[in-house]
Length: 389
Image (cartoon, rainbow, N blue to C red; front, top):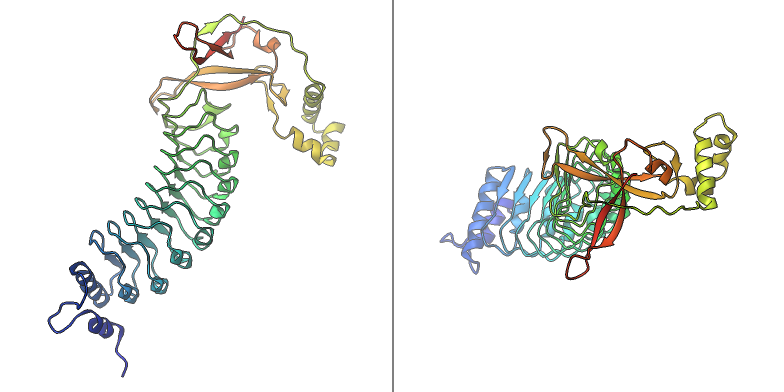
């Protein structure tokens, strides 16, 4: 007659004195805890901080297990039997010795919360990503991850991703397909830029990218219409992108950047002749605003031309269209009352169509120039401003 799983576990674990033969005290205690969980039909099981190097295979006999806590141990691998835990939705594996995300996780497709911070993980396996389509929370803080695979898009239901203190150098364009993302924390990495596709994550409310190497935030940030918290402290930003002030921010942290300073200098205005491409583009874009014009009706017949004109903007003063902006400017905006922020004013980028608009009276835009500070012992590049005349 075949033993039941519980009886088999008892026979395997203990001898007549109740002590496991040839196993460490930590493993023996863990096995006893598993037996109690099996008997109690536990939904949550905690083996954290037990100094174990492996997971007891009998854990897979806790059939109704929903939450498994294995953090703060010395575990390097997971048993394949975990795939039989069909109710497991939350798994804690932080502060162990994993060198990679265990491949078995790619077969636990019902997992919703996964915590893997404080390990030695260097990469995300595309196969594991493909099997975690129901994941809602993923914590990979304090690892050594340098790149994310395009298969990150498989985490379609992901709402919270935290990867602080890694070695990320870039985000793949596919990152923009995480359409349910609410909170993203990429602070303390090696990022020098963010992809414009990030703005496709329209549900994003909190974005943390502090202590990276970011020099410019991509154009189109207004698309993050639900963003209420932004942390870009400790980067290399000189100003915020166009329409930044249109965001519904409640908290902004931006200290420790290289923001343009409000130090007016005399400007030299050289008459510039626009290229034929720029003049033609502005004319086409202006005509396209009229829904009854021939240009508006004909433009869809020329997809290549539409692609060229796709990145157009407009002058904030005359509202005229611009394809390749001619004069880069900045205006300094005070923060909204009641908003949590480390600075009282922020520089926001703007582009004007011409010096003709720039020389108008009554606006607060400054042209931006780059010059050397001759008063320093060593030359230093610094942003300063050209005031309108």
